[in-house]
Image (cartoon, rainbow, N blue to C red; front, top):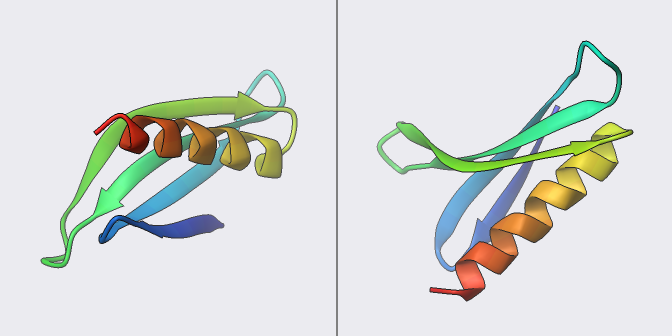
Length: 67
């Protein structure tokens, strides 16, 4: 399952997957209108999928505020 965000006219997906050692790892991808996508370079780890997704979203919003 993925979480979609629209921030400052850009569309982002937070993708999460279970970690082998337990917990979840989430990463952020920017989706473009032409169908391509690019890794943003943000990753977060949490005990649950929701915790990892929330942490990745917070990191993304902090990064975008600095621009």
